[in-house]
Length: 338
Figure 1: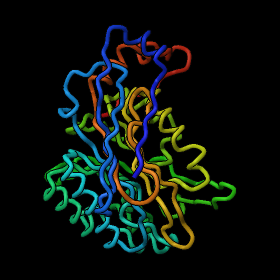
Figure 2 (figure 1 turned 90 degrees about the vertical axis):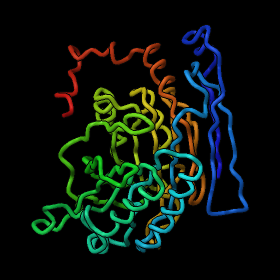
Figure 3 (figure 1 turned 180 degrees about the vertical axis):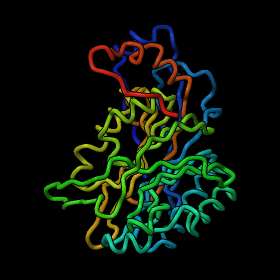
Figure 4 (figure 1 turned 60 degrees about the horizontal axis):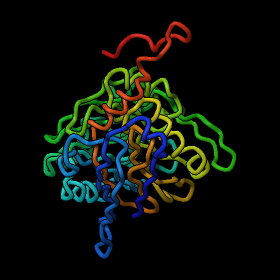
């Protein structure tokens, strides 16, 4: 598993951070399912001083998988990565959209879907308890309470605490109905209902997490709304395609981090799921400066990064963009989240 770093220009840093030293924060990248591999450690100069040593900062894990229509095999793969993340000291592990399965067609998708109180979420709740770790389950095919009436599901992002309890659930509000040349049409609305509300950011051991899913990242209004509601981490679990991935994936994630001044965590599907579907991969963590601090490349595995909320607060202090907004000119984002 690969990891790499980029650095903000020192000329800009000198204007923002005069007098601050540049401590080093390790970023770990590992592929636990290959015992012959070893973890790599990358030291990244920080743009601002940290208030604590790097090892005191919360560690998060981003899991990259290749889901198939086989739900139990998918669970086995995800559970292995979660256990490895817990062993390495992560307090929160992020799984991608469709971590439960990727079906061959809409009919199979509906057949394999489950309610939130079904067997599969029960297995993940038990896994969270066993490992003592929070889990971001990035896009569950949920049979909601209206399943019997409309025979459609929700794409639901579920957040479990370390006791295995559901502390938040967000139903994807922007459905991916697109036609990308070379990638094939997608009509998520044919079998999925859109959610009708955003979820307030949730306090976790890593910071306040704002929930979103994949296609949501193309709508900056959502990220700004979550940031204004107190989010420190935005998460976009995804299954990006092979055409849009190379063109838009990293650009959009870094843009959302910079404009919202949040950490952005994006767990992704990768590789070929079955004969008609493949995903781009390249799961990553982006800091509020827009720097990719950890990423996966090819194949299933995980990467880890530390979340420095003191760095985030310094960024917001030195670049107070939310104080400079002009709702008198272009409006605001409506009512606060409940």
